[in-house]
Image 1: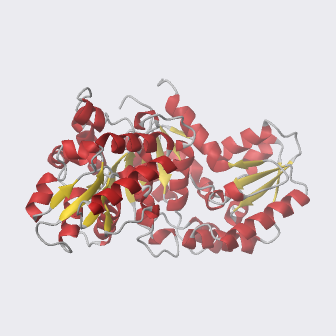
Image 2: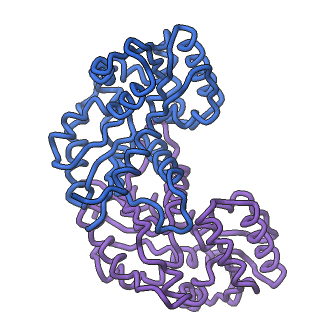
Image 3: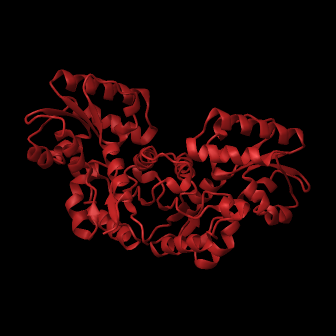
Length: 233
Length: 233
């Protein structure tokens, strides 16, 4: 294969993987199929639950499955990897260790993007899974950039909204939870919001907030676009 | 890999491949990610144009690329194959010859489904690419079932609508072309309509017709669902 093709560790959940494909389509001005960007997608909804492992403490470690998916994508011709699930980025080191191709890290890329417009010490409001907070998924990247995280007070409500979206799609109840959390974080002093959960990205188009928002799935779509257009080394 | 996983020959176009994933999601009553069905998707918008090859007569034969995609999906663990593009089913024999796993043939499955409710000699109105007609994609399957095909009079208009959807999505202009063709086919005596072009499937939910409609992408989603749930032999 003589082209750049990003391999997608997908299915966490399937809606998020579909959304990433849609956002990637939107990065292209297409006049025919051939203008669009290739992907190799392992849509694997059977990856052991990240929430069960990181929060409930009852689940098995999903990282061996993720490492195996990464290796299979590399073997099938992927020249870089991406994963539309912020929580699963907790396992990024194990994925990176399993392959020789680049992992387009949503967390690192999103924090780098935020750091371009925020001063040191600024706070980013996190619209994310409580699993992302508990597992410290963004902690190292934010610390390196001198940025702080603010979280909604009611973690259980955020988790319930994610589970609702996984089961029933972008319902008005879920939208209400997200809007409430966004307003709370802006009031608490966030200079910017991260939509850092692919389920919440489904609701992003109808979210209005008083501060700028970075949707991490768009950051990932842009990175995939960039990699796909690069000359091969 | 100990599960059934359908490999998707995708990207013809990407919107159709995304739509198949959405229709497959809709076949599942899910309470969490793990209830959904796995896929391995080769999203390859760079498959040589089927329209250029079959209609314009200026393009190269896409079948070697399709055969290679099929082999790569089989090597990556796919236990059956599916292709969300009716026109590309012209190349089904070359795909089937390249692999040892089953090809879930949208054309054969859709005609079999229609034959369950139609008597011999009935006519099916084809909402499809003129390439499907010119290449005779449905001819053998319809002949075996004793069914006839009816086509919209203005083939150029249908092709222009497909190109419009590939370039700009499901626009009102494209919707108007499809609705007009559906009414014309019903008036001409079609007992049933096939939506047999993935681009037209994008418009299917808002199409109202006086006769029953089978959307071939739903037939394919059901076949994928069935294969995924089968016990492995």
